[in-house]
View (cartoon, rainbow, N blue to C red):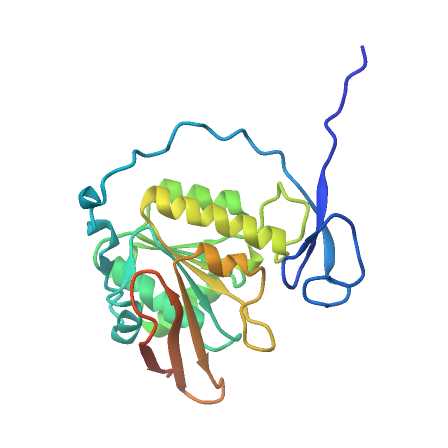
Length: 267
């Protein structure tokens, strides 16, 4: 008896702007860039349940306690965030290479570690030894600060489910990949899929997740525009790498104002 194989479906997507097309073209119809359209395999999805995941409640019965910010211990950052990170929230931090994103976020994780809470730093670009040396230089060596040198999304999610940290930093989202997808790490499909999965686990477990993002030459965040849409907060870390002053501002913040600016002196 002959067996029928499921037909592989795919579409073509622009690595610059995320525009989807039914066939390959040399020039993207969305942004006009050349040689940025690549094929992306569409994974078969499960049929969604018709049952709601949670009941609909009167707005007067919805608790606001879950949206209470938790201080990071860094005054300038807490002011920009309106008090700190919210459990279950996802924050995207963008900035040029070498601007100090990793140093700042390592200090953020050290605060819950000092308070006897588990914090997880996922380094997808540097080795664990490099991050350890930076932590020693900052004086932020704590046993509750867990370090994982990992790029595989399934392994990262396993660490989060196993240790149940209060805060997770993924540095960076452009280097994380799901082997189930055929596209390369950093592609539009990979960034979109991995960010959706991390947002889902943050909401499910009540974990504050911080994603580090690359920026393009013009200073905008690299990757699909949907990345900025799915997160709760987008922070921009700016400055001249040859000078010590840095500016931190929020371009999107679902839990507060975007009018505050934080000033840092890197030493």
